[in-house]
Length: 290
Image (cartoon, rainbow, N blue to C red; front, top):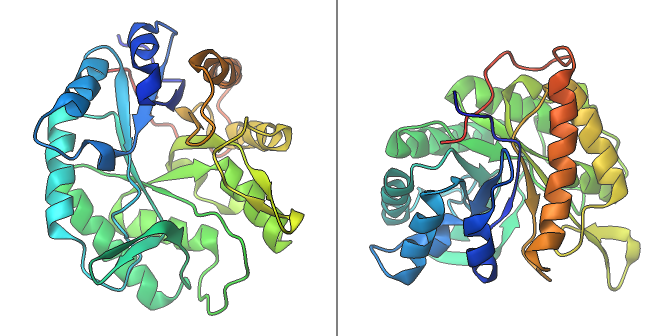
């Protein structure tokens, strides 16, 4: 029987040769599919070479699921073709919008969690899953400023999306930590649909250059902070072991440094797996390496 995925890392071109040869148990790699939406060429060939040896997850940043506009059919078709070609072990997207009337913005933008938004996002998730012929995981957003007009709390909104669409949850622990810090609003982990967590993200952050530590930025540009590691331990106590990604997109260090963080997460997952069923954890089997 294939061994289960444990901890993975963002896959960057400068690490190709080393990543290809990695043999760490439970290792997997995650990429943004937008960088590989081509019919051929060296970049796609590179990804296919990695996929021949390792499990791959696709983490999208441009479906714009929360936009008040139809999905980009051409983009969705290219994504579906990549999913069919690569056969990723996981596919995920953000609970945000980033496109409007054909223009893509370089941010994952927030929206009021209204009843109308819930229906719209659920419909877009359904259309995406129909096109990909598989369920996807939805990531909880980062929060920087209070946004008025919500009808739903974030945990309840996510739980209802899971109920309506059959999607799963990508729980970004750094996003939880930053939102609580930036908004000054504590959160209840037990309110989130922990049974639906299919993947966990860990990332670094930094203080805003102008406002300092009053505003923390989800930069993916530093090592994971100790408070985020502590929160991750609390999450695992509720979910049990889940595939966990060390996310790094800026100031990317040598692969050995990323792998050290990856190995720390792997050790925590292995320890949790030895314990009895975690409180609130799903009884679903762990995702195998394929």
